[in-house]
Image: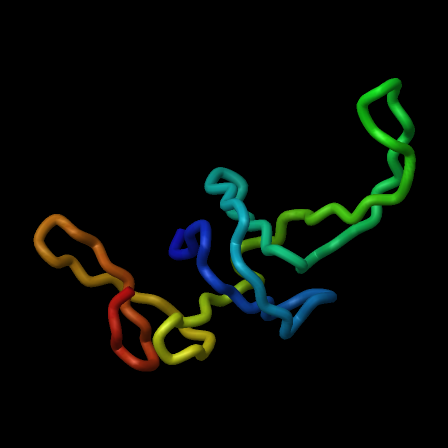
Length: 101
């Protein structure tokens, strides 16, 4: 997967199309990512003795990785990514500005 934790991504499909945020977690086996502030759902919590308070909480649910696109940190545009091998290092390259990150 070309998206890693900490990347800024933009949602390209779904109810939050056009929103962007940082990747909080990547699920490699399921090919999904969670993005901060995107794909929020409400969850009703029951009170537990001394642990939690009852109420309605916002929960971030994972998005399919195919529904997000990486935003280049250099040119600040949504872009696809290629790879460049420099010795033992594997760097990502922006397809729009051709800079490595």
